Amino acid sequence: MNLITGKKVGVTAEEKSLRYYKFFERDMAEIPAEKIALLDKPSEIPAVSFDQKNLYLAGEDKNFCQIGYGIMADGTAFVCNETFMPNVEGTMLDWWFGWHSVASDLRYKVWDSEDHYFARADNVAYVCDKNVPLSQKTWGVNHYILEDIGAGPMPLILHFKRPKDFGYDEKIIGTKFCESLVCACGDGDCAAAMTHKWYQVEGGVEFVSRFWIGFGIVEGKVIKTLPANIKIPIEVPRGLFAHNIKEFSNLAAILPELYSENKNNF
Image 1 (cartoon, rainbow, N blue to C red):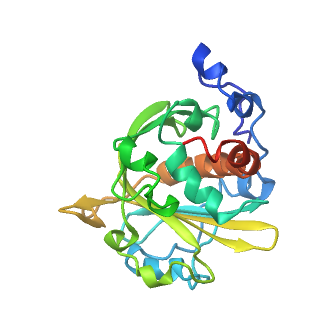
Image 2: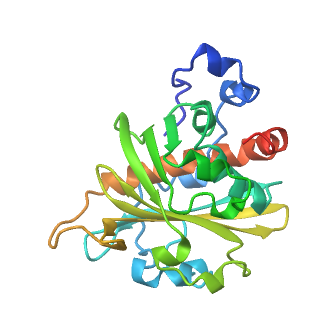
């Protein structure tokens, strides 16, 4: 199955003049064949549950799904992925998640030139504030997004949270299997909770993603919002898994150079 079509989203003349437009012009990075092979094979092993998500953060969820997608016993769905990012340092990822949400829409487009249209932070002053640490630039910020995960361009709001407000034990951050992370709840066609964490390994970083589909924010807390006796269609996590393995394969390919040339350009 070929997930890379070569058909890019539109860009403006102004976007073409930006120094990082060259990353948009490049072909999308190849997706590992072993991940593509999983697209038609839902995982028989469940992901760690949302209630046990601190096991994932600590790297203690190895008995659960690591790469794949599927449906949980309660009808919610999951997506799991791991991406080795060569020559990437953790600081680059802390920078990336704030940087791509401000200024030109091209910043989001270079991540996935075929499926990303824009990502716009609702608190630009906070994101661009030099006094806010890179690792905190998503805390409490909403990203208004337009992207295509297989069914055409769809709007999405990502409500990023401070880790403790997401339910994580912040003492785990900075340990062996969690150098840093971002976490959010997506408000769109199908609500989902999401975390991307990363940690240093030989030659780069290991980037580890989890999505719990059927969870949202109610009165400030992240809980299951999927009604009882409802089961999420398998096409939902399958489409998200396909998108995830595509966009993060490409980010791994461009991030070192993109960061080197733009790290002081917030």
